[in-house]
Length: 111
Image (tube, rainbow, N blue to C red; front, side):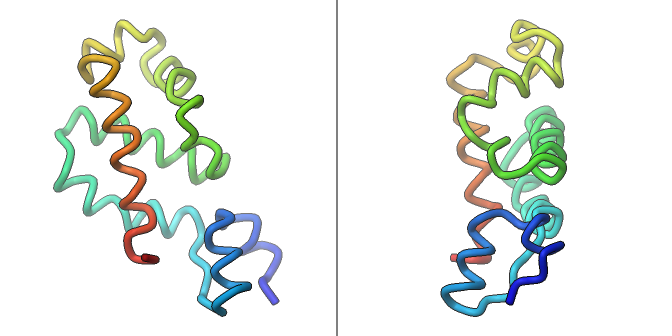
């Protein structure tokens, strides 16, 4: 049985992997920490700062913070305006690519 506190701090992937394959679940914080090394080597410093912010939201709130519909609200929360985010991170399509691409590093050790 999965301890309740772990289930609340893990995302659905870990809960299902635990139930189906008896894999030890990781908390969202552990997943975020594990992903930071890959993020450091694949993204520039400005992108890393944004992704660190996204990871902190993921840890606090949950996996739904990684939905593509959350990108604009996250940018507004971090930068206050989309224009400021674009000045720091580039064109909207580049920002979207960074947001989507980094997520694979959350689950790479589980694959």
